[in-house]
Image (cartoon, rainbow, N blue to C red):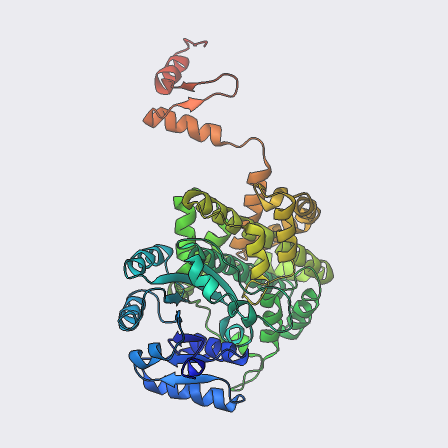
Length: 495
């Protein structure tokens, strides 16, 4: 009888995500105990559980009571701010845990911190799982995407709970065991990097349509609604259409026009770009999106620069001419195609980063399966994730999504529209760094010969770094300056 009264799982950390995930689990019929250092959060969560149908959720005001309310082997999800708060929470709870119990960190944590904690937990006989959680507040309550990595036993202990936290309306699994070590957190980090790129590309599509096309917010809402019924169907396209419809309750017009153009961030995008650099993986779309967030933060500098450059003689004649001459129907369709092709490049970069890290760490990540779980509740869920999964099923060694036969055909079909949009934006002085980065990535990757031969010659000249030749094996070094002077003197040298 005592065992029957114990909760199946626990959750510590009752901010927005923690509260909603706890209610989600309880709503699926699993008794859950909750704890928060601020006891008012516990009482608030218990009250919500009662209001939402008497859900099987119990609150506890002390770490001891919370831990002892769980059936063994105990499994505790913690959702607190990354960094020291995670270590503090683990310390408070582990005093009452026993060998075989498991801690599951659901925050946006740096993967190496997770690997350190796996080792520390193991020394106490505890299991540890680092689990990426995506979907925002609504996703946590109705069905998030979960990316657990670390102890396989810790995952198996809750394997009957996590898949059932998905959206009721979909058969797509919301979670699968990602891999060992910090793989779950790393996958979530890259997911967020792709999300950065996705959001940047959508904002550029908005800017081109509004600034060059002269479209109203209502026009944009209708366009994005239509796009969401086609190949661009996704959570981000859907919510963008909704954003354009919201009126400003404090004045005329739509709320989106009253929002300050400064974008916040929490660090996962920066981590993604840093990891790409360390692993020598090109991720220019994701990097461009990060740069744009940095530049957006320079609001005062941008306003001052606008004034200085206007005084220096810059004008908007090209923009005015573009607006007057544009075929709006064609522009809308071109932007749709440019956005689709650019998004594929962003996802390709993220997938290549995951593969490179998996190879380095021996995680054996299944890229097709990751695309599948991203379709079930996360921020970047989209129709074409099914296509990405199928691409990796066709070829598990696929070097890049761009060269999958189906995606390759679509990229080629869309490149004309893509180039028109980027060229039009450049001519009008409208920045589209994400689309430009994606197009440059595509053009660079598809060329069999690049001007890197000149760069390598320069490196050999000033640093004797040597070079390889295309017509014979080996490494070579040339006395470039000496030979150039001889040629200048008219002596001429033949190799």
